[in-house]
Length: 139
Length: 121
Image 1 (cartoon, each protein chain N blue to C red):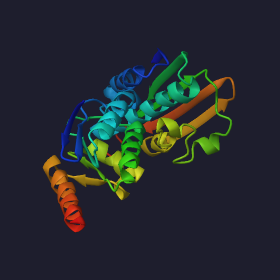
Image 2 (image 1 turned 30 degrees about the vertical axis):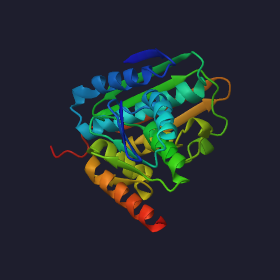
Image 3 (image 1 turned 135 degrees about the horizontal axis):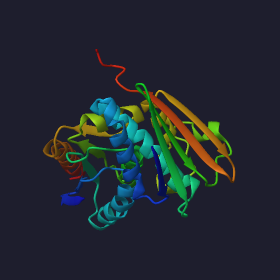
Image 4 (image 1 turned 120 degrees about the horizontal axis):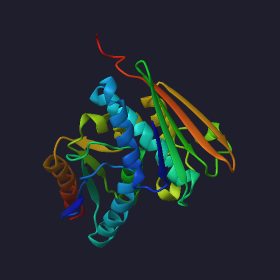
């Protein structure tokens, strides 16, 4: 599934709702759904706020299912991140004046099984996340 | 979103998914009320919130910082399980109290205020 959206704040809820609908075929628990929705929301919000800094651009959300594992990839062609390690530190934010909590990446990490961030300054950022659905359930 | 000022407490009824988009709208209106109504304590009600991301943490912390300097407090009420997990993970409960209902939060805040006033007299 590939979704291309404009980098406006209103699209954050659209993106997470589409991904949630896409993964319902795996019969996720409400908790798993909430986890994925939060992670997608964080990634897309980062692209809107940081990647494009309020300017208009495209954000791609690619989602695939393999067995019971979902992969979500969120890509923007914005400013990029110069120090990914620093950006991923909990509570670190470059936008304190916007009251960003600095917890975006921490939430993505906590709610998904795997998180990989690749970025190039001036080119953009890709966030790749994976999660096994139905892990906790007794079959 | 709905707002209700009771004494020196502002109750904010959040009625949408609490993401960055909702926060941008909520922030200005609640700050306007905090200043205009001389609000000391803030109660965020989550009865109708099914989704929240880290933007919500930023909103609560930001409003709390506004009233903190005048001895004010912030609380969250009617928090569902999904939102509760995010509050726990963020460490929000170390500084902000959770109550089961709005009346309980109001009672706590207004009693405290009563005592403070009493001391002054």
